[in-house]
Length: 165
Image (cartoon, rainbow, N blue to C red; front, top):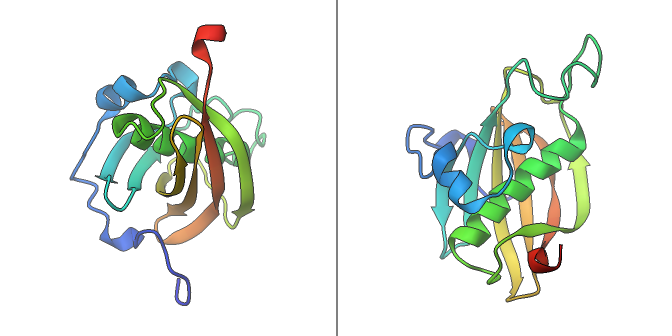
């Protein structure tokens, strides 16, 4: 994407260099079953606050039969969830907020620029841009299928009061 500074260049990602597989991701992210949206983390740098993961989409994703019938497209809200899970992994792994469980605090400037289908590999790059320990953090995210930017935006992550739930 000429003219746009990307968090990472998707052509430079080494998918063979797994930083965290699904078992390692589960140590940090509480989502299970149909809500587990990550296959692996392939880059995680606490200094630059950049984390990159991906999801390999199968033909039997929970949304395939209904979104859209005969033409399955990954829902935008699920694309945002994948980004949130990459951010949650990074934050938990490096204890950015001092919390056990995280949730959405908001989404800003999200743009969907392409479609994601079963059989695709969705690459997600996140960069934490602001941290208020114990309160929230903000991260930019970009998502790619191959080298095509399919989604981008900003998300806010907040600690969830699990003891009160």
